[in-house]
Image (cartoon, rainbow, N blue to C red):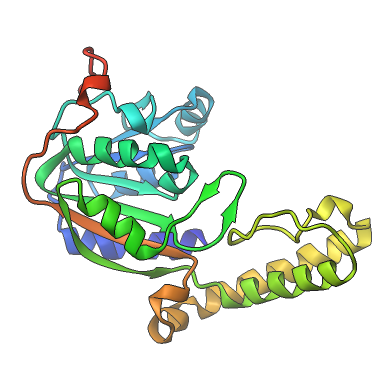
Length: 258
């Protein structure tokens, strides 16, 4: 899955043609994996994550760029600070009523002519997963002063999804409860903790095989399958003009700048 995302990253950066030293914000940077990838491209990267533990781990793993603790709904940066803002599977974990505010903040700190890059779920649901259809993502974000450059499907994972679907149907026939989680890459319905040890080992062995086959087939899936059946959408937006965030009144007056 990481290889698929890395290929998508490279394609996007090549399209955007960011200059050396361009200022980039990586939202919810976690352990710094994508920050380090951006560093390799010679970009001036800033990471932000609400978990100080994750930021500490990012340092231990060799992340050199500045990183701060904070929430995407209240970014501690000045307006128009970055030429590229990215969030990989971040907004989908924010409750729907807070998603607009988070996206508005990302657009606020983006410079005119800059790019907003998102990878988000377009199918499935779970306890902390709030996916949207592609048109919903595009429609909501386009109201914030950015325009869609392109979008496409990402991570079809047909073998893995087919395997999980089959297992969930078999468990339902056997009378196991449904977990209510239909998000991609979820475990068997009801959780594998209810399965005997041998069944767990068999399940995860077969699941790893299905994932490996899915990764192998992903380039072909991207070429022949419609984007609408992918698990994620890759969205690139461009900012054409300065737009004051409707949530600027909620921001702290002491904003940091790097």
